[in-house]
Length: 251
Ligand SMILES: Nc1ncnc2c1ncn2[C@@H]1O[C@H](COP(=O)(O)OP(=O)(O)OP(=O)(O)O)[C@@H](O)[C@H]1O
Image 1 (cartoon, rainbow, N blue to C red):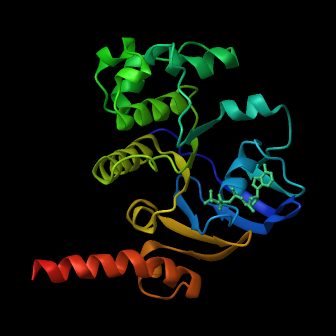
Image 2 (image 1 turned 120 degrees about the vertical axis):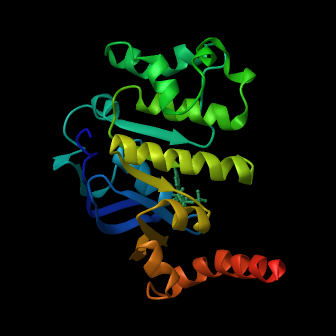
Image 3 (image 1 turned 30 degrees about the horizontal axis):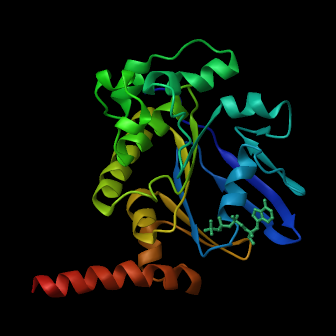
């Protein structure tokens, strides 16, 4: 087992876009953990995530990764150590899968990655390397996005609704695959999702955001036991009700 991914710490992190998007957030994400960030639209989830790799700069407070302030040094150097996967992956349509995966290290001036190994990590056949993104399914493209995010050897992964555009069956399979990869590589993963069931099933810990603040912070088991507060209860109620309704149908 390689070293685990780094700890990420938020200290009084604040961002204003006119109003407060992220409001004095204090939180520590343990090294090697898988944390889901949930909450309603506009709660500040993406803004909080994007301050980690400095796609958004905080107005107040600081964020450290493995004890180092992300504000030190140049943002492109920081981003080399951080994988970023988002819903509309942004693969280059005119480049092959291999060229897409090799792009982040190339831009960073780092050595070329082992594309075959990265494809194997995301469980895609080696001969996909020569294909163009439009010759892949949505789920396969998303896996190429994960491979590309890992290509610089990053141990911290930021995932913003990574599987949001996929059908439920693919989404479930790719989510579980990603969780296995997280465990195997010892990553630290922070994933924004709208899907509470996905958060409960994949994460070690779920953070609920509302109006720029973290209003609940608990393990999936604690969330389901109703001990994580009213905001968490409201979000858990939907998948819990669906699970009960399905059980009832089963007779
Ligand atoms: N670049 C920006 N310029 C102005 N306002 C912004 C910008 N980015 C985010 N905001 C505002 O900040 C608040 C938080 O947005 P954010 O995208 O972080 O929420 P979210 O919880 O990720 O929402 P969603 O689930 O809908 O993606 C919202 O009110 C949003 O309109």
